[in-house]
Length: 158
Ligand SMILES: [Zn+2]
Ligand SMILES: [Zn+2]
Image (cartoon, rainbow, N blue to C red):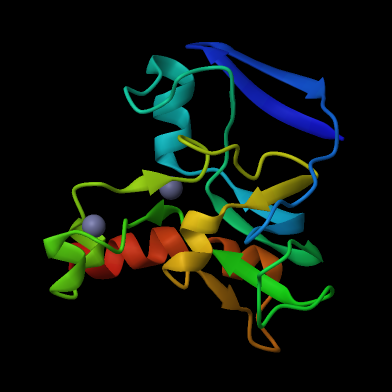
């Protein structure tokens, strides 16, 4: 499959990569839309202290479930879904107080895990554990669903 992989500031390569298969408690999605936001541009220009390259970028992910790993429940191939970008740990005191958006141990798709600038992406167990895969309602496109994260940033900012 084709991926866009970050190697260093100014060095993002379109490459062929083996198609990933989901392990236990993971999902495999066919990426139908992965938007680029200002952070992607910042990473492209300057890198990011949470990215240890090489890394497939892309964290505004919407797609279709194509395979489920053992142990997952509630997902079926063909489901249209959107994936959270920032992944709270779900375990710390802040998360337990119901404030996962400010979890100090957040990880992110496209930073700690290969992201959605690819034909397929693996949704890691960390995302499923915190209920970070959302069904896309009928009438909402993959393009619209993929910008749920920037919209959430705006709402949180307000
Ligand atoms: Zn973003
Ligand atoms: Zn936490």
